[in-house]
Image (cartoon, rainbow, N blue to C red; front, side):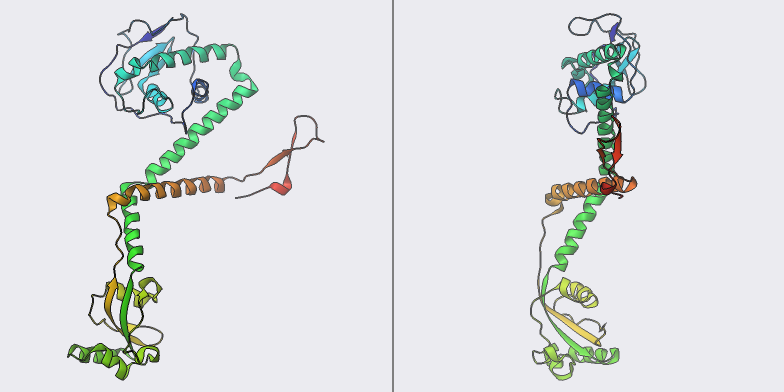
Length: 326
């Protein structure tokens, strides 16, 4: 006998138990249910048309109420939410319970339970083809759930903002600057030259007088427009943070001690966070999926096999030349 709860108008915050990678039909739905080990019982009484009069004696259990029963097999709200996720009936899993009845989804699930029970009674679940389909459905559901879990863990708002900050740093490194440099042999001399510049002597004049950098000495220390990312690390870091027209502190390098001044900077502007967020999310999702799949492949040795037609019927021989260990 099929029993059904009264139609409920309230929302229930139930979490999906399973989620398929795509939308499945009736057969795949049955396969998924069977693969997860649901035990069905043959319906003692067939119901023609929509489910019969609601039975108020079917109790709710916590936040996952029973919507209907097919014999002793309950159909819970979480089951219905899972069905929503793999069907074309509704667009969202967060729908009022009433809609699950009005769309006929609970009816469809009851049919699935009853039909699956009859299929098991006739031993269809023990045939090679159906066993393979059940195993495939189970793997598909579990792999999809594992990928969803990885995305929820790695594509949070915190991760998205960190990715945006990285974009900002990359944009800053891509800026072009027009700068002058002056090279001397010691920190003491560099500090002395810096003090003289601060008294009003132009940086370029001091570069012509004392700089050991003969490449730029004749041009008063002037360099052509240069990307910050192309400068040596200590120079680039100093230039990136240096205000325009300000003489830097002495910077130690293998050549000696540099004084630097930035005369102009070509700022590279990036769009605001909310505008870039969809692209950043898509990129993080792709990256997470690729890393998760690679992790799974690295966890297990993978070997290909091919049929050995010289072996007894039904046997497979490992193709040693095709063995791949990740």
